[in-house]
Image 1 (cartoon, rainbow, N blue to C red):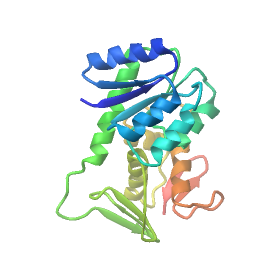
Image 2: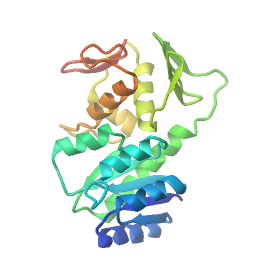
Image 3: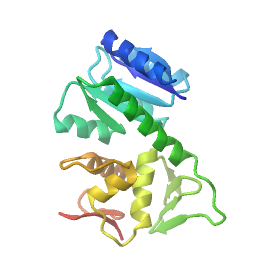
Image 4: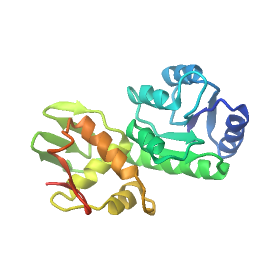
Length: 229
């Protein structure tokens, strides 16, 4: 099924998630602190990580950043905080989902399944006879190879970042609303005040070396959405 890294300094929470995930057939690796979590991330094959934000030694944001230096598997953040800024920060540094405590363990399992489905989908693209590729002013994105290049240099995108950019390029010249992006890329119903798309667009622009005020590739049409011209 998959190998899940669960990181939480509250042993009861980590053990509870382990039980529910194992009941669904997943193999669970547990860490009660950031140091052990990073050791697992370096030495083990992992398909998805669930990271508590508030840990005694290294916070979950830092762990997520370290994971994203080498790996692109889904990361779900757990936190007792509900402020939008914390959620945006987690999504901006590369997390794929965010769950606040207290939570229903069944919801966590459902989120895990959803993220793994997307990850498998976007990393096992069936080759077509003709390559599906867009080249836009030095930006090249190839769906078959699942690779993106900027002026000849490969850009490391997470599966979600890649699918977000691909959807915009595939609809080049059309303004796409945050609602349409979320429902087509994430495959879930959009909820008002959802900052997920904005956070991922910000992360994508950073990787494309886009200036904040005058981006070259992914442009904002205020009050409407985003467009790749």
